[in-house]
Image 1: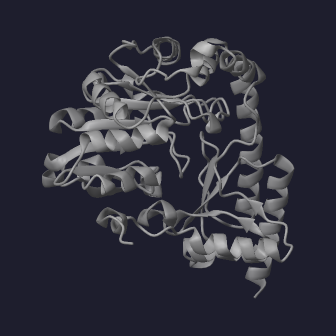
Image 2: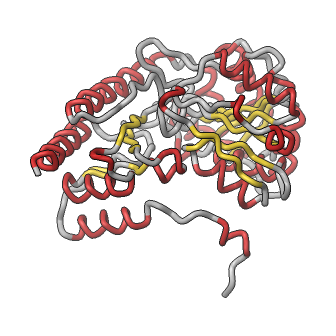
Length: 392
């Protein structure tokens, strides 16, 4: 059976060999600690779970949902943006509900880019930006995120011919996988560039509510005139520990929102209305206690990891947001070699940076979504493995 030609264009899955080694170790009875998956280990707040239980019992919610998201959900999202970012949105024309950000990111690419177009994609980055551009038939132009630029792309260095063909620019701050953050000055630069070349600025704001040392992430829509060319994805997955619930929204430029909603109406039937009702409760109740406790936990874990990695003499920037720590590989190893080294010698799984793009080579990513005691144990194992390595 022959697959569609587009499937042959997808890059290989770099975790495949690592997964094989992990499975082999587990079969041999080793206790593996997986720090490679970015999935919150804390439960969804109980008041949100209760809201879902009540909404799921309502027969009115058992019918097809609204393709664009229920109007009350879109209103709640627009009110959240007003309170959180002082950004005013029309819930009818500037907000569309999503079955999680991932499907919205994919479908927006299909709605906006095609053969002959260019999609500007950070490197390293969440792989969906790149893979969906490839599947849509567009050309991907990578924007390296380098440590010497605080992992911000050099927008002024993009060739003129690329800018004239570009249809979309993806930005993701706070950033996965590097943990970097973007100042408002950078957003102003990005907005000006996209307005000049008529490029849709796509902001993935998945980690907005995670912040350390007093940091709070801005929205690109806070920048004057951003609404003319920007759409932003806001997910409840990370701030409310709702990754499995699959609920999010895209907000901003009405043309892009309409295109995304129109395409979605041909592909899915929207998120379960009961989940949307629970999301409304999440967005309207005061989240301060939840966010404060969660950020305190992630910062405690971050500091454990930073101290351990620096004791191993590895380069590690201090992240102000996300639940990721991005650090250099030891002894000039490739990221794949280093991931395999820690699996085999410490029974700890860390994500290879190259799986997020070529510019991620030489880096590794640790997720802070593992129980604190297990995370501390993983750090001790990695330190012992490094001590054995340096004694050779």
